[in-house]
Image 1 (cartoon, rainbow, N blue to C red):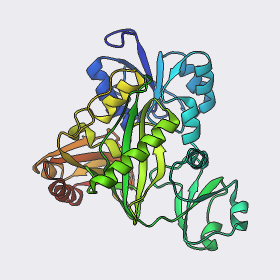
Image 2: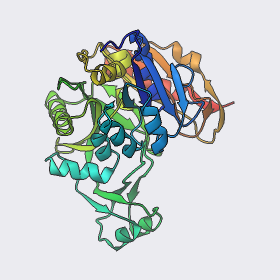
Image 3: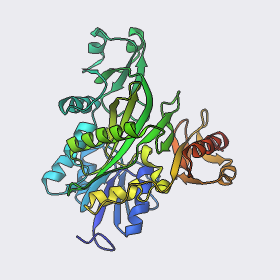
Image 4: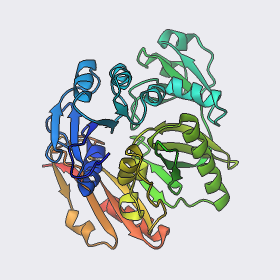
Length: 380
């Protein structure tokens, strides 16, 4: 099929910042894009070829949108699966596949999938509701996660006692044992429908202690070659079990004993891969396009070491956004900002990111900290 400068229409469910960065790559190929998104002011609204306001969790909205495109992909996984399954049944090509999304949408299903396929992960228990959880004997402290609609630390809590359980919402959930770990790592795996598969270098993630959001992503991770090989091997094991088409971000724990355990996965471009825009020969967004269109996959090697810094809304600031001290960070070596086009800032809302590129990962990390301490995302 001719995708370039043609009548081919690529549909994307979701119009946030991931979609916005995806559109940068479709523009390079001159691929016609159609976006379905809840908000008319979403980051993709001004740059998609066609922008439809509609709820991607609504069956009719997703189904009707899907009937207008030639291939459908996602930038968010919390979408109406029943509509996707029906569209697939009627012949629409959808990547990643609905059956993959169906498992990944639900953290309980995800954990069961890992157990069934011999994929190393933390011990866990599943609960259908709060009452079942309250009756259970748990080993405190432990980690509670809602089965669905959790993201960026939302729907995840540390439980220290039964009193913490009493404060939880009444939803189906999992409870995991706490894993003592040295590092939180991630590997992006790309796979096309011909079965060609490539991994990006292992990245190291540093989290904000209060918001439980990624603050810094370092590539390459500051780990031994043996641990890096082990992490990539586990990530490939996950990807081969799912047989997904597109990108799969595999989040991992490196334990105190240097074992690698899978935390969870995301079937799309991911925050842990943003470094690749400046740092890789083929960035994750171009790679996603290549994978879903069954094109040859691009080179995943690093051009340079890089650190990504998330720019999130400052606490106690709600309103029209202002990026304070932007000019100061632009004076720093190797700094490239990416602003997501969101006009309203809120506490801890992802508003952009900055990549710092340097030959030396440790020097890049130092500059990244200066960036973090200099720029402020505030309300006017």
